[in-house]
Length: 292
Image (cartoon, rainbow, N blue to C red; front, side, top):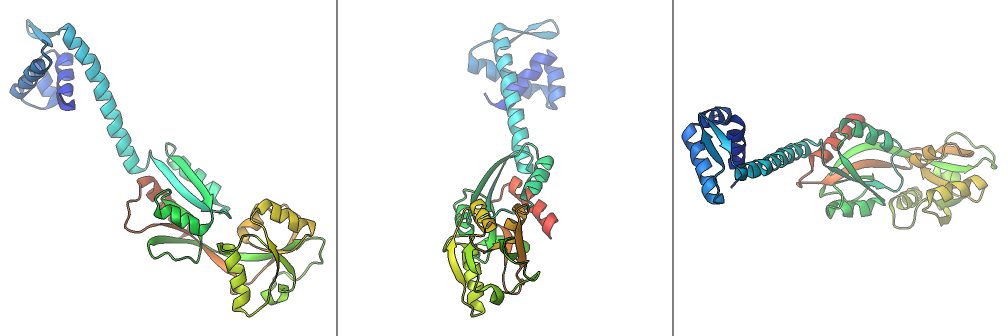
């Protein structure tokens, strides 16, 4: 038996006449009668018996009807859910985010959740180059990363360009509103990242590009600890604007560095020429509407 035959049998039981069942199913009577005969032969049991103008369901038929209803309901639910997944209503959004998270991300995810309340989430945090590996390995479909990186096999949605700030404890004398790399090259700097990672590289590359020596005293990848150390006067640091916004209540002096000297782009990436789930497509569309 197949699902079509079970649906035919449900109609026969509920209409109690072949003619009425055939009309309900929009098929002719002879094929429907043949399907009923085939089912009875396959099961070796009489499923309905004629009583005057109508069919009466046998005990075997009642048993089959009970399970036919369950199977038909499951099939209907499966079809509906698969269609919903195809539309992005159901499904799972798998997203990688850079260690220095996008400040607006909670609000954007909340907006996405309001539009697609049945979608579930898998969110992984890591450094940008590793996030690209996760996308290549299909661990996550999308990732929010810091550029530049080698992205030939990725599609990229540029979100924004982020400035950097030179930050110090308020124990130090207030400087001008904006400072250049040349003006801060002799200050002790605790980097907000570890060697080999994007922010670490961007800061050192900027000093090198302007042929400046930097006074790097260390590195700290724990953002909360870094900011507390800076607030205590332990050292100065250079951080992306995202971090500054996350810790805006700390008593710090913050001086914007000209974007012509130091800035990074933030983008949403996914694999080119690979299947992208509808949930992921919907998230890309939301980000495109917000940033483009």
